[in-house]
Length: 224
Image (tube, rainbow, N blue to C red; front, side, top):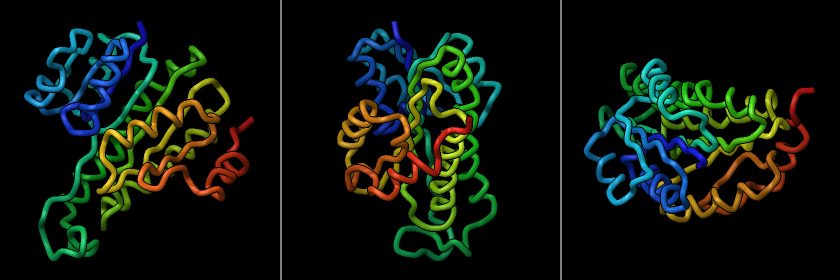
């Protein structure tokens, strides 16, 4: 049976991703820090295994994967958003007014968490010559969330430059505040049938602009 790891599986997008994969006969490891939310996600899914774990904790993540075995697909949907502190712009606190502790919290969850998940799962995929790795970038509202979203996007580009062409499909999903989770996952599913170098998905507006796709295919071609 194929195994999928879904992080942020207690939230809307992660929960739906975990349920869809379980319904598709995947063996699903559903991970989050919210135990009650995980248990709700896993209701009536006997092939779903819940693990309370913070993706920002590499040792805890390693323990989860040691029990899971080889992972064939990752949907990393664990993200956070800054709290409502300080003067706010249209979408949240001003970039100049966010406390450093809040900046560190968001970057740890959104960027370090993504890197930990990649480091824990991508080497095995590369060794087997197959796999699918989907990283979700939070809606780039203001300040640190925009920085975190850009970092996840750039990290995906870097991974493709270093490891593209070795059998693993990489995707970066650029989320927004308008597109429902079902539509996001529909676009992810469709994208996995496209060329591996078509890295970036913008579900709110369809496929990435042509210029971006050309850039992925030419400028971001894998290192020989």
